Length: 624
Image (cartoon, rainbow, N blue to C red; front, top):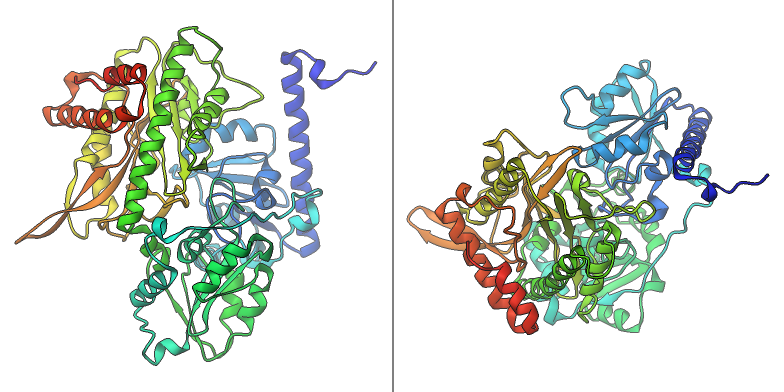
């Protein structure tokens, strides 16, 4: 008798499917072990990156996911001849435990005091002088230096991509069509941006030193910003896989020639950018004049590329700025980019209003049953009503009840979660518009809440407001600001492990550096023009999650005898759910901020809304 898997009851079907999947994962790990034996290696490290070190990668580079079955965006897998383990951070602990169960791959919880580092684990597992393999295209020069030091006396060996050999039916490498970002949206020409970066490096095009240098760039968002072009080679990031050189040799862009239509070619030519095929990059850098000074960021250049440019007799200079000089220049938005952000925030807020109204109407039983995945699609649908919308900026997080405790949870279409009038619903989504990028989190109270839940919600809100109100001297770094958001949460004996704020790109990567707001030290100071998220949180594992996120613009506040001071302006224009607020826990200043924020939201949005939508928004933004 033939029985199809889908015809089985769920209580039989789901465990059987899990069993089959775990068998496939074990087979894949064994294929990698066969590669280790062939190459005389005792271990191999598999990261989540591609050669350009962005947050998202094409399916072609999802080797760690294919090997382990864990599909979170950040993790590293290490396979030895006898063991395997996966390291990931607190955003993914719950998800990883579920997806790795039965795979034979142990979960290593990063930043947990009892968790060994990758190097510590390998040294405790392998014999002295064992060889550990890596793909030298997928690790930066800085990472390799760190591993060589921490792994000793183990030996690091550089290999070509083993997945070309062991991954049958590997997805193809894809290219997309490029588009131009006009000057009225970018605010600066390529020429102006190159000059800014050269000046920051101390390289004036008129001095003798500058006639002998070349800067090598492999970060695709930096290249897109410099060249004023965008694409869609990479999920959620409007980028093209590319490399770029600039300096005394001119400006050379390496990209798929199939991506460039006549308009893009004309734009690049008019900016004196010489175009080459993406695959010609490696030959080109090997043939650079040996006397030419090479400059690159060790954070973002692969070890493979470093080896090709660091030839015998050549001079290599490391870009001292974390992430590189281009990343820092890109992080400081010009006036036109800031105007674009304001416009994007307005358009996005209009979609959020429609989304929130849809949520409430259907929770009241008006039309259809709501699931997490349906809501993720619905907010994108509302955004798409704007002609300037060009896609989501990251995988949407729509997390009901206990799923909200997983910071980077993604709805499962195959196992839909039905949303009821209970507990919290956490929604974290963002979008790209031609003139800006958005990222917002709102936590909705759907039913009766406990005293603890209301207190937690209010403390998260207090932290978000405190950071929004910050005034700080020039030169202040994110680690000094972080406690403003965490303080109220610490005060009730709770915490969150992820950062409080990340930079946001201008129709580029939603998670952008080099600035950040987090507990760990980051030497990059905040300067006017930087756009950064503000997202404190509380997560109660197995129960609920709360996160409230707005986007902030760093601005000049005042200058006096003590020096220059900066502040933040909130760019986001989306109401904050008042239902769960315990107002007695807010100070007068915090209440004033919230009421003032909501007044601004109503003022900006109401002219674009229907009368019924205005009435709804008036209630959501009324004073408390």
